[in-house]
Image 1 (tube, rainbow, N blue to C red):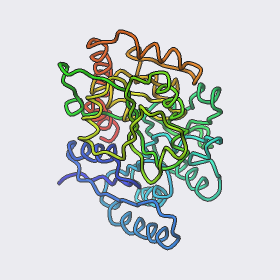
Image 2 (image 1 turned 90 degrees about the vertical axis):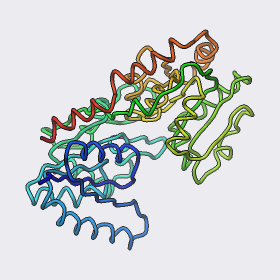
Image 3 (image 1 turned 135 degrees about the vertical axis):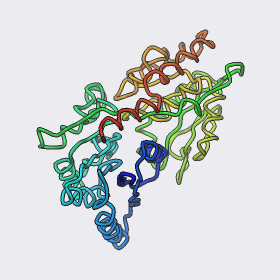
Image 4 (image 1 turned 60 degrees about the horizontal axis):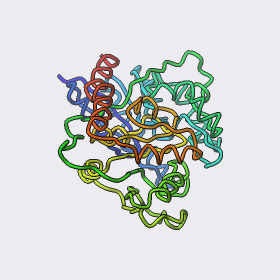
Length: 348
């Protein structure tokens, strides 16, 4: 009989689907508790009731529980994992280990009930898996430059909390590119759903770059529910697109020569790693997991004061060898097989 696992999550992102596939490939039957974020009180309470019923049904049969991110959706399943003496794990991706006061962002920003429950979750859980080591003790550079407070250990009084770095992994066969095709342009992507995301992802710097490079095409992907042009006076050489499918993103990565990750806070950025696998030369800020992803294959900058250096980098003679270096770094460090093996080691 197959061993069983329960996975709880609020939004079914690509990395959640990937981990479910990994668990199934390891021979586990996966029970899913999909608990969407709800602001409506009745729907919020119904979510908690569903979590309770599914936790009783699933966790009594499961070997362990994984919660992608720490939030309301984690509390009841983790509580029942304790009652059933089952191992529980929270995967921390960034938001759940950060306070950005300037942008009113982060799980612990407001305090109150949500923050209290999140701290209880960290106390109850057996293990925390961070997608990058900076999410354990915090990113010093982000604190110095942006006053971003970060690191799971800063938000829990549990001194013996077990934290492990298990990086996200990427399908290096799917994310690829044709080395014979010419690549041009600069791309950036995120889920731009409000002004905070615009600020957090560094779109103002992206826009400034477009000012200095009027003959280069710039593309922003992921506009959702807002118009970015209402918050930033975008340069005419910038194209804005909505949320794209996985295959559509692959095509965009393959067409563009550079990928821009100008964030003030991150975990290990999925889009950056996917873009590098598709031969994009990376340009990124020196925070959290971005420097580890880029290494020496692209350009790392400190603040908007480095604009001229970034422009010089884009205008420099970068060719096929540089594209390969970017791809090879992600293949070497973050291939999906590495995450699969680390998960296997930690659940069996």
